[in-house]
Image (tube, rainbow, N blue to C red; front, side):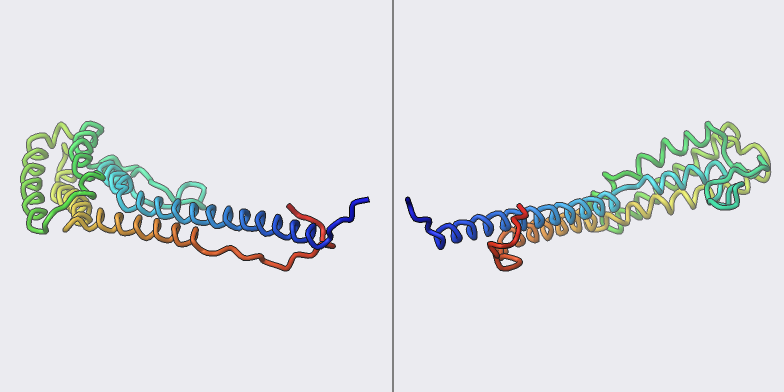
Length: 211
């Protein structure tokens, strides 16, 4: 009868256990790294996303404001009961949104502008917006004295929102931050892959195998 090599068998089991634990640890590391990458991508998306600005502008054009809803628990956008508090009609809102959506855009955020160039763009846009609204204010819903008093506020608010988007692109700031963030994430992932794997506890032949 062939004699069983106990030491060789135990050594084989230890090697198998070490290999499997190494693979498990690497899998956990990869998942963690992917999670960090996902969070980083979400941050990048947040940096270039401008939907919130556009949403706020549209509510502003409709005269809506944030307040407590009828259920007294939640907050949300509330439409004023007094129609004279609504500065623009549907035509006016769509006309303004058509203009601002061309400026409040991720392409603007990811561009490269000097501060002087931004001043030039805002000055040109301000002149054109004033001319556009003055030429169409009645068709846009500003048909009474109170609505007309909101004319200057309408223009200034719109320009400030657009300017905040352009300021993210001064000197290519946003695209530079995104590139740096991606480089750091890739370096972290590569570093984690190069960490030597060790056993978390000593192998015991009498312990139940958990793999």
